[in-house]
Image: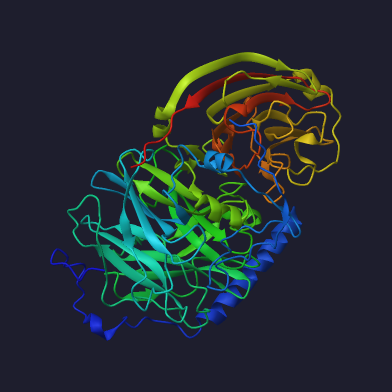
Amino acid sequence: MKSPSPYIPLLDSGRDPSRGPSKRRRPSRVVILLLAGLLAAALLVAVALNYKGSGESAVNRPEKTVPAVARGVTEGVSAKSFAPLLGALKSNWTNKILAWQRSAYHFQPKKNWMNDPNGPVFYKGWYHFFYQYNPYGAVWGNIVWGHAVSMDLIHWRHLPIAMVPDQWYDINGVWTGSATILADGQLVMLYTGSTNESVQVQNLAYPADPSDPLLTNWIKYSGNPVLVPPPGIHYKDFRDPTTAWLTPEGKWRFTIGSKVNKIGISLVYDTEDFKSYQLLDGVLHGVPGTGMWECVDFYPVSKIQENGLDTSDNGPGVKHVLKTSLDDDRNDYYALGIYDSSTAKWTPDNPIIDVGIGLRYDYGIFYASKTFYDQNKKRRVLWGWIKETDSEDTDVRKGWSSVQAIPRTIRLDKETGSNLVLWPVEEFDKLRLKKKVFDNVEAKAGSVVPLDVGSATQLDIVVEFEVDQKALESINGTNTTYSCNANGGAAERGALGPFGLLVLTDNDQVEQTPVYFYISKDIQGNFSTFFCADHSRSSKAPDVDKAIYGSTVPVIKGEKLSMRVLVDHSVVESFGQGGRTCITSRIYPTTAVGDDARLFLFNNATDAGITASLQIWQMSSAYVQ
């Protein structure tokens, strides 16, 4: 790491950095008050709840294998490896199929392991993307900050590693962090380091040359670490600082994820210079029973306009989103609420769907996400990590692991007012090539209709469905409760579903990945709609994920059901009802690959017919240098 640069008189507070981190106010009653307040919150929640192309087979010589050990847990982060079912056979993949699994238009390094997105930012004409990266292999460990830049969030240029673990305070890993652009245009990064004793501390870094639009060299502040775990917080439960926002008093404020016992919390700090800090009383928010909060994110969304908001924006036309990545189940949860800057507290609109117990960005394979405000196009953009769900042995053999989701815009759903909508950034449409249109395709109950689009490996599919109105009206409601992952998937037939698409499916439909809607009707005549993705028959391979994913999706009266599905080799991203519910899939077919991958429309309902209108584009590959 380079020595401090003459370019940087960064936020000089006049303090001698050799004196170490500045003293922070740590109220002796913080943990006691925290537990008391959160116990009250738990009782409030309880009251609220009561109130209401190849023909080759990849599976050649199955062998017994031992489930992979979850990497990262003993080091103090969430599990970073997928463990196949106990006793699962080991697949011996062909090199041809392993090569096919690599994505064509999702971001990934040329080789090796990648996980969390870090410090995304638009700076001097370039989109910068930093990420957790192991330069030495396809498994988690030796974590540095990889770095790439783009003009459009689709085509990328890889740059040299931005930061490496070369100091005592980050020698066990340069972990997740966030970027903040100051009022004068300066850029700072706060990131978590794992020390030589595996203590999680927060550190400051900044560009060696702020005039360099590519930000190729970084300086770590000589006074690091700038924050250590406060009293009452375990030394391995203090990580992932957010982007900072300005308070009305002109201070910078940010939050860091943690826990007290099983109460997930977000600690709040104020700073004027990013070198000395004040820990505020209490927490921004906490939810009992949710465990460790990783990769916390906090930002405003407009109730009025479609544009995104700068992280410091607040006012009567604003709601605030609080998001966490739960260490316990490795899913990303969010809630909408009201932020009071005078108390540094956030209150959920609906405690029943509080952070960690309600809504999710994505109901599939999507974790450790991070947003940034794109001042270039006045939008908020979301990045998310898509892990592998095959065996670690397979990842080592193919030489790479994980991709990033297509960057998504994120905004408040003005129709419902109670959820976010996520959608691929508009630049992604530039990859569309040949288009096929299928108008008013009928699919009777119990039918499968082939869609002739050629190879179905790289597609962008937009579909609208109309369900037989007579069937909707005539079907008797029931008290049966439906769930995507508990009702047999796409093979479980109901009166009004499932129906949708079969992606990455072979000619005989032995391997298939259904993405579908299911409509249920209760005895009062009310409808609920579910959006699901079924991996249970996605592959003949025994050591890959075959779960069923999904959730309910809000449907406004008079709306047609719609979905958009992006197919990119082993990655499928699905968006229901304009992005109200999203599902990301990792799929590892053995025969439905390359030119042998097909696309079908299906309707497995027992009573209702459907009509579908589809627009389907073949997709180009992204350019990566």
